[in-house]
Image (cartoon, rainbow, N blue to C red; front, side, top):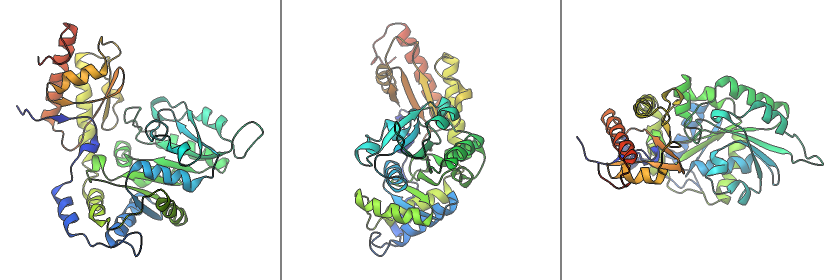
Length: 358
């Protein structure tokens, strides 16, 4: 059995494929912030086509894509409505307030889907004597913190309808948009249709080394391009990395189903050890949240013990670990991970220290 490390911390650890490396080495280049980089322009056009939008904008990260959407859709001092545990509110370092000068309000979101009654109550089309105007509704799919869950198309449609009734735009944080589309069995454009804008990563499960694309109307993207310069995201010969993004969109989308299958298998293996650890019925994409609430050890201790067995995991809460499958995780790796969890589970029950090897 292999003794190499199995990295389940994130799908951001994926490395580019050989086809990506070849494309990067031979990509036609230009100054993207001046005359335009031809490879970047090709990626942007392909991204717009895949999402059913008029135009796209290549940016370094999903966080920047979200920030540009906030800046482009809104004005200073309005409110952005997001789901509880959203990436925008949880892991983007307060950019919504510190850089975009916006207020955000988290709404209840069972399994990542914004509560519609709460959304209807919170939406405010204009400034009133006791409430801010709503500038944007931001929804996330798949929903990272909720365990890679995917709101239904019906739910997305209901969110869009409520927002449109009050003339409020909708942005979709689709960092893992294609995972969501694969889970729903529809093209990504079907999901993206429920947003005025959508951002997605060509890295993560799609395996490109860097980059995200923000898509929307031509007018929206023209304005977002100006904001990209404002926040320091202007790019030069970015075709070097955009080339990998093109390969990602052309070759790597359908294989995401393999990651989903392995995530379910991983959750099933953990559930066999202890049903509280994971429920495979709740795994919809490539993310498995491991519930350690009944354990007498913290998630950080589990991470130490698992690393001693060659398994890298990411504690996300004091008693929760997040596992992500990706193209570098095989069926054998899933089996090894379950065995390691079994050993740690048994070892902690017996009172062994976290760094014990067996």
